[in-house]
Length: 316
Image (cartoon, rainbow, N blue to C red; front, side, top):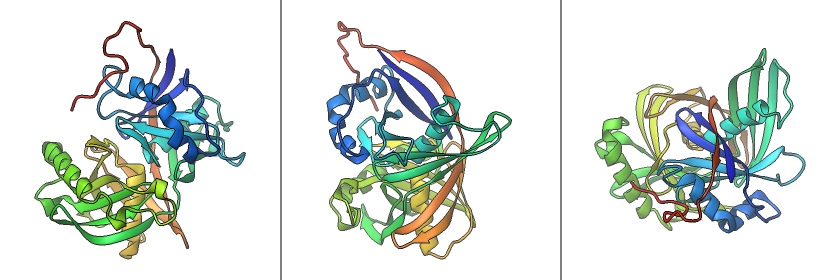
């Protein structure tokens, strides 16, 4: 029996496994990510159909790297384990305060410190009279890896925001960030990502475990300081939210172009994150991104030993 508490952040699901998951060995969260194959049957059970779907997302809670963080987390999706997740970090901030994992005053700001595979992040949870009103996700240093790289016949900019993303204006491929173009955007993202496999710009400069193009971000310029985006990550999975770590990558690119204001970042379903660069370090810019998560349910999942579908399947 596997228990979960589910949230959504900006429309993107986030399923937190709260019980029944075997221990995952490792000294650090990043090491545990490499060893998560030992419990991969649980990821498939929670993520794949019929209990999940091809765009499902969630996490396993694990110990932190050291006592400086409240807990660690391994993020997962239908194809495996990601190195970062901003929408998940926002949901974890809400979860930690609501469930009492981190003590919080009824009114005020509480920092929930979380170790993720890409480093240590913070979910700054704002409460007012016992009600959570917003969360600010403070990310790891984010930076530009390359600009103007040609992939599948189009120029893309590549940046790191805890994971590595290729950014491309949707108009440059004759599309727009709208639900009507989503099928075509997914197909183009898959081709762009495949074309960048092994490209030097897809390599993390310090740790190869963080290498590889995780997602392709298509964006529309709506007005100065306002963009609409859709992030297609893993193998054709679509982020319903404006994508937290993707927003961090976009902020790194925009900061390099001289943008110093607040980015209003819309998703393909109309939800919004706002983000800004709050610090510049030798390792990169530090983005902070505002959002909110909402609990959608408690679940207990099981696998009937006679079920011929086992841990499930995905159907795109």
